[in-house]
Amino acid sequence: MASHVDESPSYGNAQSQPGKTKSAINKVLSTPEILEMILVQLDMRTLLTSAQLVCYNWANLISESPSIQKALFFTPIGANEWGEEKIINPLLRETFPSFFPTKDKAADHPFDYSSLPMTKDSSTMGQFVRKDASWRKMLVQQPPISDIGLYHIISARGGDSAESSSIPADQKMQEFGYDGVRMERLFELLLFSRDVEFRPYTNARMYWSTREPIEFDSEYRNIKDEFHRLIGKFGVVLYTSMVRQCSMGVYRGSNSEEFIRKEVITAYEEHGFDVSCKEKEIEESKSEVSEIEGQDRRFNTYEVDDRLAHIIVTEMWDNWPAPEQKEN
Image (cartoon, rainbow, N blue to C red; front, side):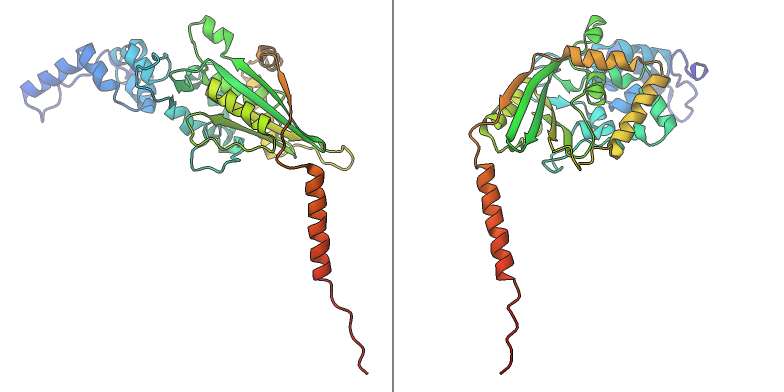
């Protein structure tokens, strides 16, 4: 690949352009400040791929320019540098759609591994999970967020309970100068967290404060209030839930999402990652868990059960076939 990259692009052989025009173009493209202003207008995918193959000067400018590195979501911006709006990384949103549910999705939009391009075939999987993949170091949002809120709800016969906590940006990333939550942290949180399960009676999804309105419903007011506190504080929340059932007769096997997740973990191992170390780091990095018991319920479970039973009996009685009358 390097043999096709010149020291600088040459336009001297462009016979169709007058000499003055060629000279002006070469002068513009040879001026770093002007070239930087041009390149920063390109889309992220072009900047990461083809633009860097034009010549060594372009590649060096893209990797060293503060404004281009900010546009590529590698370098954090200041609080109001791009205005007051919070901007989700557009390339990550396109590549990892389940991590960034869009406004037109249903309120209960679940996480879906099969929507990720990396799961289409083994060769694509290998390219994605390699240690030097550029997506790993990309900020998920500008201005950056520093922590991810975690909210786990357990539903049982006696009512709901919740566990509230958070996890900071990856410490090793920060030691190398990569502040803020990077995509590697978010991706591996869903890959390795013990609270994330893809089995019957479980759910997992991401909530972002940039997605308005935030549609989160709960039978318990305090559980709902805690969720909105988390989303307001951190800007992003990993929501997980499970229904605690009687173990007798309940199937708890894996579904298709769990099988795909295991394939991704296997690819991690094949590329030299220590999976057990990753899992341990995720759990040890979580903040202290706050446990919440559901209170101020909008209605009582037993009242609902009695009401439902009454409706069923009434409908059965109303639709019960009348006895046949004997002819005189």
